Length: 244
Image (cartoon, rainbow, N blue to C red):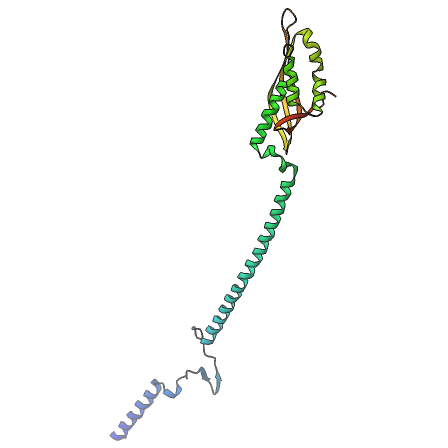
């Protein structure tokens, strides 16, 4: 039979074995270097990458950021230089276009740009037409004064031809011709020359008969006017094909 001493030693051995089964020896703890031992062979397992950025990566990113900043700083002066060239080219082109427009006949037409001069031409030509194409058999001198005051050049002969029938019949029929401009438009003013379109009403009264007879009509024509001795005078009369 086992003795008491044997029993005590047995209990000690059992306790030691049990303790060795439950406890993990320090020598079997996996090292932090990433090496894992499996079976009899050992192989190196890469350690997982750290979530934080390494100093070398930070330095590289900083260098890239600096490079991009320097690139942008170089590109800005280049872009501004190109823009300056483009704006300079546009200014040159615009100046040339403006000069070309000023040289066109439309741009030289003061009737489109000078209201005061246009009003002056319109007023003086209207007055001239009213006096030139009105005739009173009792005041023929007034008609002659109108010719001297308002006509020049070939308009003198044109007016004489147009008023010849009136002058021939005026004394016998005791004729009074009245012309009133109702509308006028200055088509062109180029320096001291102008062209004006005229619309006028006319009344022709014969007082020789026992009962006065009056006829009415309308006229449309254009006149070429020139500025001479400080006044606008009619230099040509265009009947717009009415006499052809």
